[in-house]
Length: 338
Image (cartoon, rainbow, N blue to C red):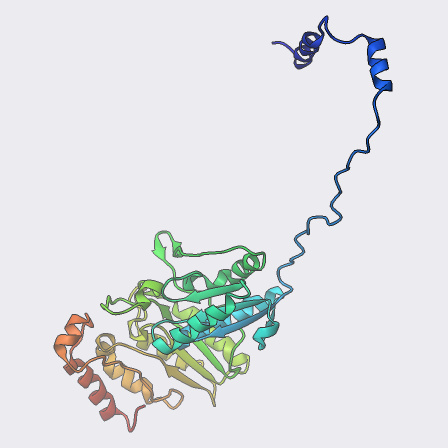
């Protein structure tokens, strides 16, 4: 194989010809050259600006709209960001980045959310976590630091995949993550994410997915730790608390009795929304639990419509009579209910 230098020498020899000027001719020609000042290219005095952005040193303004589950997600995200070094601020004008966390189930929350997006677009640095067209999947709030880091650097980030373990969809964030509570006296605990239904009108299903319940032991430990931190109320939340445990071989009353055992004197437990089909199976046990002195006599049972045909079209999986039975039974077993 011919060496690279050989090809260079061949090229040089090819450049020599009989018509080239003689050495003394070159010298004579050089004397007749009139020197001309060449225009030098001005060197740039400004070096390209290095990326001086150091993630973890900026101020973050966070705003949450929507249900208690969404508020719990927001508290987890704030806790992780603060632990990493970001400073959470209450003043949006001094923030380096806005984190907007919304649930679009209700129109007022969505309207406020969209108005804030329009304002945030001026800064071009914001993170969206919401329940319809997700830029930051609600199931991956444990990656909020990663997302904010990249956004601070000027990148666009989308997390759209679902978290799975051996093919089984996982629930939301780990319960042992740090969080900053909006109300230091109230701990909001999501006992499960997603649901078992497929209602025709629901947007939440697209964001939260199918039912995924947390193990009872983890929920009890989270409650116990919260009480040690000074919390005096536990709010249990999810898209459907009544469906808890159906995917892991347990049920809601079993979980509630375990939680009641760790509620200290002066503290209370509050149960979130449950759909009629699942609470119907446990009315006797639920009545006993709601009569416990450390459990609020509160139950959120949606009716949606007083028309069986409408409920059928909505694929609600219950009828008006089912709803009446839940309400009348609990009213009979309890002095009052909210």
